[in-house]
Every structure is written in structure tokens, then in C-alpha cells.
Image (cartoon, rainbow over all chains, first blue to last red; front, side, top):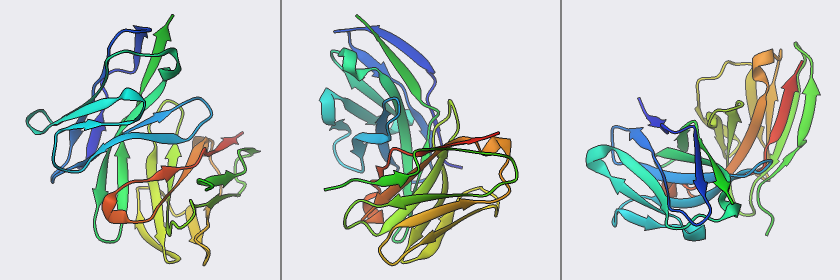
Length: 115
Length: 113
């Protein structure tokens, strides 16, 4: 069965420090992978996505993620965190066919940023 | 270009009542999905609508039902509410399911007392 694991529930980093959020997935076929961010009271905003091709994908707000098939991972990275990055981050694997698509989400990682 | 809009933003119900949540998809999007996000959890897929029909359904009981209208807007109905139905209900729209990308609304926060 498809599933997504985000091992870190909370992470605190200092502003300007680098960030890596972990994501592991279980999926039988080639996965479609996504990272979304959710700020308090907000819906989910897409940061980046991987469908195929280059395993290092760039997203908005300076985020990037690397797909590693051998490790079933899709970790999110940012070289220098800003205070406005404090939010909850969700990794998702998408199951798609010609006529439907649904996402399986991890339980999220809440990021705190220290001044 | 308006994104996905949902109403109401917050509502409180008591056990056994029924609730209807509404969603207008992003302009031009014809597919609507509903997700339930319990506190401290990631969103869970409820069902997806396309051309006014339910295409796919997640692991939710029949108390959860939906509808899609000709203008692509959608409703989520939950009957016989339980305390465990308290959650943020997210609507997402998409244009091309093959691309897999979903656009989410800000959600409707349901509290069941």
C-alpha cells in the first residue's frame, strides 16, 4: 500500500541556517512526489514536484528536493532559512491514472525558526 | 484569477447533525477532490469528482457523500456527525489528472461537540 513517512514531527533551526526535511515513501510504481507547505489558517501551497527526469528539482521560495529511488526518499532542502519559512511541511505521493489522481500525505513536519 | 474557494470557513455542529461544505474550484478546473485533515495529521483523501460523478473514493464511510454541479463546484455532505469528524476539510481542484497537481483551498474547519 502507498504510504508516506515524515520521521520528524518538529524541527527548529536558526534563521540563516540550512534545512533538510526528510520524507520516505512506499509506492509500487514510479512515484509522483510533492512537497506542500501549510501556514497557520492557510491551505496547502505547492513548493515543488517530481514526475520524472532530473532527480534534483527546484521549487519556489528557494526550496529544492532530491529524489533517491534507492532510498525511497524525497528530502526537502533549503540552504538558508528565513523566519517566514516557519510553517508545516507535507510530503505527498500522487497516484494518477488517465481519469483520477489522489495523494497520500505524510503527517507533516512543523518547522520553527529561531531569530 | 480566483483560486479554490471554500465555505464556510468555520462551523460548529453537535453529534448526530448533518453538515454541507461547499467548494468552488480554480477557474477552468473540472476535477474536485476532498480531503480530511485531522489535528496533527496530514490530509486524507475522501473522494474525487469529475463530470458530476464520483471517480474515486478513499476509506470513508457512506456518511460522507458529495456532489459536483455542472459549473464544476462541489459539495461535501456528512451525515450523523461524530466527534471524530472534527477536522479541517480541504477541497482541491485540478485540470489534468495525469499531471497529478492539485490546488487547495484554505479549508472549512468543522468542530463537532
